[in-house]
Image 1 (spheres, one colour):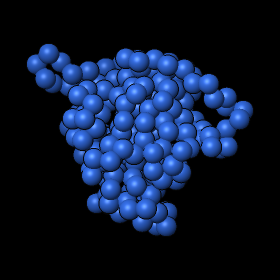
Image 2 (cartoon, one colour):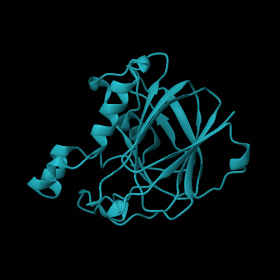
Image 3 (cartoon, helix red, strand yellow):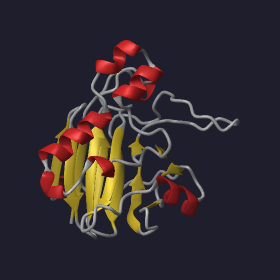
Image 4 (cartoon, helix red, strand yellow):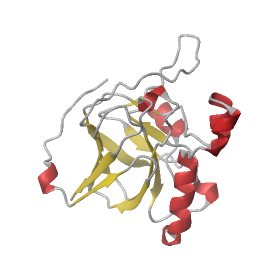
Length: 213
């Protein structure tokens, strides 16, 4: 973990927005701008995708990011790399300390495997992403572009045997992660609605977005 607070003040942000659990955020962050996600009430998971805004076929790659930094977790100093191994963004501040790259996003199908067949009808992060790209065709994103994601604030430890476990969150109210864009990027967030996952504290809550020039 590398816990480092930011000098940026929320009152000086160019833009802020609160995202309710189960809702999405879709927007463009210009190169050089800094982008913060705040876990307002703690134990929330923000399932996030990044794309090159000028060519969305170039997108965040968990494999390239993990290989280049030799670490499966993200924190201050991590570089988020694309499927072309270019740097999309850098994490410049982080008061949570660790973010998941491996757990993936919830879908109606995975909910039936993890929880129960009757959970299939529950809203999932993949639904939020699909709704976002359907409602905003101007971004040029399609179903095939939904790929690797980051689970900011989510706690998915790797066991000594190499397995994954979904544990109680390590975040807390007001914790945040802050990233500076290296190129123009599209940010697509599903603020996870999943109330069966301990990473959400069984109580999905809002997150806040803030952007500085």
